[in-house]
Image (cartoon, rainbow, N blue to C red; front, side, top):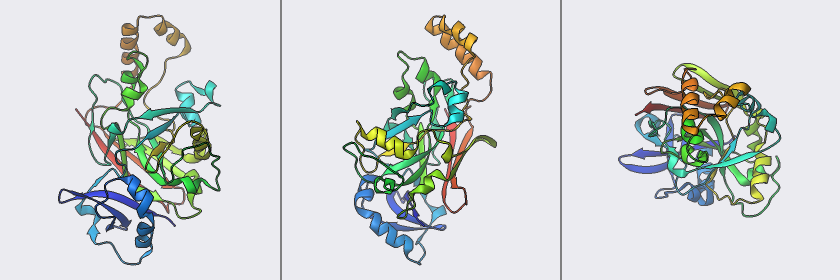
Length: 319
């Protein structure tokens, strides 16, 4: 069985700890970056996790921050669940793997507020499983179910917030700029570190997202189109990844955005860009599914047998 690590603030100082029930056992004093943890301190964390003693700090007395630290790369898989491709009418591309980037400036903590991006009207959500890179990848490799644990240290819960109008209706469709707005990537509260030979559990995780009390996304990681093993193999053909980087594996169905039907799409595409943006935004807001100020977005990632629980992301939307 693996264990969970976290990063927390206490008395204005940041610390690393191993989660032990409702207690924290601190480790790696003075370490600032997740990369250092991955490179030099996992053996210490494992020893603490296996020790029968309790932690010395009550979990409820500290502020948990994102365990993913700068500098880092956030490499994302888009449209990676069949249901999500179908709902956004991209199922004709079911054999293609889509990669994109999200900037580290978007990272925020598991209970911190999501700050509404300037100029955004269509704020959407996307719960995802993130994979934390353990070993740097600097050349093409073949990642398999047998060796993925050599390259991936563990899992983290992520909400890939998506300001749809900033992505679609700025010049040239600015996915990177839209998705990289500050606070658009809540992460945490824990990183679950795999025990040896345990990485296959990433295919046995139930992933959910609520807006207030409304369950919007409810899926299983076995339903991914491109598996984590294949994604890392494909990415390695031309992209470097370092320890402490995170690969976001895509979101399931249930997001707020709903593309127009075929005829309506043709009608909108014949419009001038400014008018098209207005018509699209109005029709999307009419669904009532996009986020509003004051909404609380809550996410979970739990193994199907309940033995692994990555905690809860709970973020309020504020302006």
